[in-house]
Length: 52
Length: 220
Image (tube, rainbow over all chains, first blue to last red; front, side, top):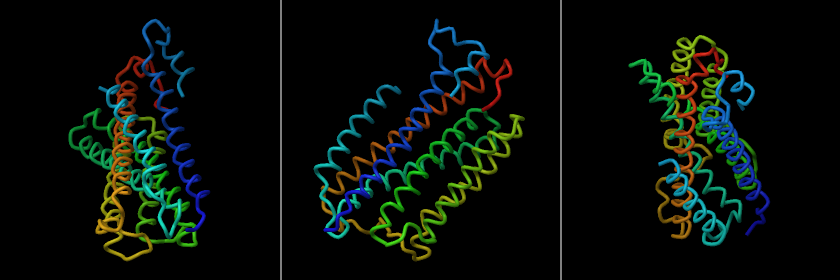
């Protein structure tokens, strides 16, 4: 059996980085468009400042 | 509902990870790199889900001018591009030790790259055009061009014989442990893709209908 463990790990690392990066971006967008009540993040000026 | 769906995806993803590590055996001829197979195929199917959502959403927008359909198209296109990027990067990593090359202009690889370029153009159009009506119309047209490429990707292996292997028709080619791992990973990754599409859809709807936009909030 050929030693291809390094390539397998690289494949899974790429998968994790791309997907993880997108999930983080989406969560930041979610927080900026769905502010919690009382957080004060309601005006468009504040929204711009917090948008990812 | 979103929380329950997320919980389900996490549970299935953990089971999938366990199977990839401990249950599925390494392939005799390829070694451990063959384990990329599980995420590669699952990401390809998730890419289909994303791009089909984008295409169907765009068609519905053109027919009914419904803003929710446009939001669905945006969500599908973005998630589709993410999974298409995964397919286009994990594929060459897998191919290098097996085929001896990172890339070959095989029909399936080429049509997938073409589809990625179309939907990246879609996202660029969304950012470039400021007039909302014009932005929706032009991007819907781009998504429909991308939708036409989906059957070409899917049937490329059958229509033109290239280097890319066909998954269909290989039912007895793998042991049951590999099939179990594949189906678990497919469930987890497609479940995650639908969750991401749902979240992105809700964000887009809020952007379109929320107070922020009415106060002059730019799209991007």
